[in-house]
Amino acid sequence: MARVVKGGLIQASLNTPVTESNEVIKRNMIEKHLKLIEQAAQQGVQMLCLQELFYGPYFCAEQSTRWYDLTEKVPEGETTRLMQEVAKKHGMVMIVPVYEEDMTGVYYNTAAVIDADGTYLGKYRKTHIPHCKPGFWEKFYFRPGNLGYPVFQTQFGKVGVYICYDRHFPEGARALGLGGAEIVFNPSATVAGLSQYLWKLEQPADAVANQYFVGAINRVGHEQPWDIGKWYGSSYFCDPRGQIVAQAGEDEDEVLVADLDLDQIAEVRKVWQFFRDRRPDLYSQLVEL
Picture 1: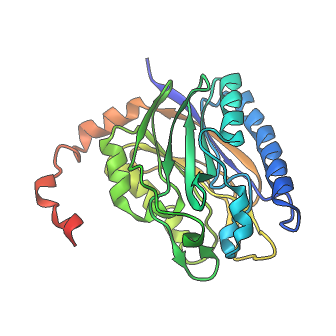
Picture 2: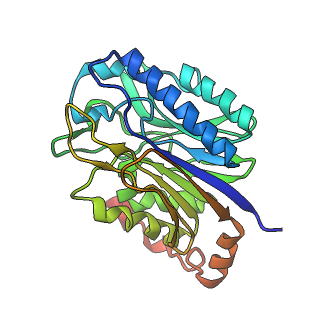
């Protein structure tokens, strides 16, 4: 019997002006996402990923200590605990990106992974942190992740996580493949312009090179007062051949759903023996430079 998993991605716009308090912004965005999660559940989604820093704006558009107050512990924080209940209610694996406080003054861009019975499986911390051009001041907010590239065994398959800027670095994508990931989710926040053409290039390339499914998520809309560009959505799933099998629009909130046949991974690897033909004995220079 084919191992078909129904995957889901949620892309959403900010629904509260940043002139409101952090508490109001966070509450409103969580309430909005709970409704979208309900829509995903009604469509039978078994694995669901939310967008990067889903419960607030992309606040890295400025450098302000105000946004440190959006941090919370993982898994002890209120959002992870809430989503554990939601995951259990719907029998749904969930990848939940949050702003994590490890200790006072030490913060990470993190995604909690929750199994379909509500069990917290672990977390991934964004490894590569950009600090470039006006509007992407992430080193002000996040330490580089220090947990490596874990792969989580869920009830519906093996899941890996990469976050946004990570997608420009193939090394972690390869590590997730070698770790057994069958689908890698990449919650992101990326605007139209310089890197938009890479959106449909790099992650399908990772899917091909490592022969797994990829779920890429991006937010939508313009976030004032910064308006560093249009968050252009275009969330998608691609298969181990790098073919996009489902894609969301550029402008609207959307729950993207696709059937993912995990048996396709074995089929592709019987043809393209990339893992067999690797030469790690010759790659030491990659980590020495």
